[in-house]
Image (tube, rainbow over all chains, first blue to last red; front, side, top):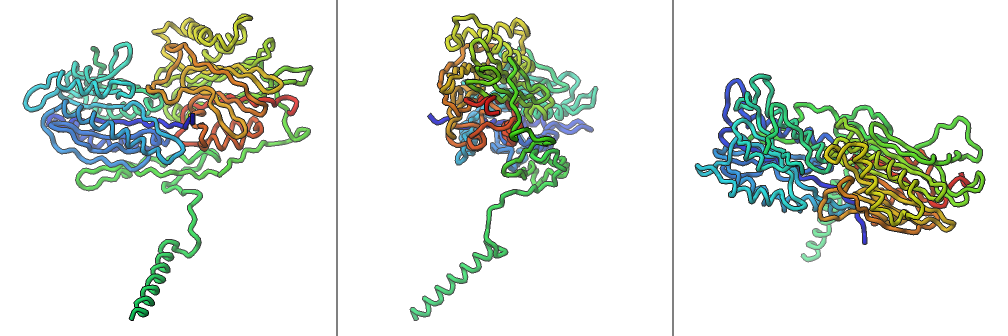
Length: 247
Length: 372
């Protein structure tokens, strides 16, 4: 049997809520969506500057509100990565977001594997790392979505030996129990679900410290990607201005 | 008329060929693929002759935006201006007799980790008659903290070790790779290597190494839990591969026990053969102690001139038996045993992808003190 050299490719998804509440501005602060739109390209640029990470990591950005759309298709950090602006949305359709992500995962895996063809090594696609950022509860078509509507897609995404590892990050307005249900976690029951601490305004800034919550989320995602690619599984710290959601 | 059209056609073709040639060749010189790609970014001064230039500082203006809110992350360029064959030469004040350094005897037991610095050992061992060995093994070991750990400011988590058992005339090697998701994996890896060597050498007579894999790994795990905290407090895990090499006049008998993606390979006559690996598993979660204590066990006989290599995935991951760059390179460079400084250079190969901690312990079978 020929034993081939393997390089591991890490698919990374950022799912960003772009519903109307994410565009709400409280002067003098900027809206959370404005902050994330500016910071995600910075995040990608910073990640791509780590040469070893750029060789191993692939990233895709998906926006969701009334529907889901790709802002950035699965792209190697070793090449140019473009992120387009999202369309303005209204509600927070978890079902559409999770179903869309599930449908993207298989073709994205094939695309990453194809990148290794023609080389003298093959790409072993690792469990995807998913960062789910939202400020709302599941709400679409003017009603709350029941967990039994969207949880089956969440389970399809995370189950199995190649299932994704998912962190759910809730800004002010998110629903803790829902974040906990979306997230995956450790064997000890802790899940990678985080929610903004009280005192964080809807614009995504802590009133007390004046920090940008969006910036702390992006910083944690950046560090998590670096640590996770090095460790081979999701490693994430609690963002400043947030707490871990307990089950 | 037909003649005129034929002439015009041939003339046109000739003109096309000439202009295409000028367009493709440009200067008229023969076209060659560039051997070295020059950086598009301005490089900082290099810190080491074989270390790639660090990336240029990030400029806020580097992010380019097109209208309509499209933002572009930077175009990354491959900057590798490395010599084809890095030259490492010793600084010699007074050349040794015969032009070759004497090889020291391997310490009876050595175990080192890659926590905050690289560690290296080398030496010969084998059955000896007086000062001369009769069956010979030459050992080289290196563990280095990976670039990723260095970038993150975290501790390297590999460990390596070797022990010579005079009573059994057997060499034991161990390599462990701490799992990066847990903070105490570095100490766990070093402890596992120490325990593997100690338990292999001190095992009771009558227990064969070959048959004792599960017992050995079970004892190592018990020791880990006892020494570093209970199972719920251990906060660390590691892969482990352990080998016994019993030198004979016609080579060596080798037994390998392994859990996880640290591997064992043999090189003979330019061909790499995997002795232990766990590639291609349906689940890409890495097996490791203390959760998994049942090793895979394999036995081999290696001929004189073979090289046995145990390594963490940061090194052996780049090997294969179908001609990977590292496999081809080392098959060439290790036709005969390299000097210790060359070994350090070879294992520390430069590649942007392979940036994890990197460890290798290699044994040249049939070489030792007598040819030193």
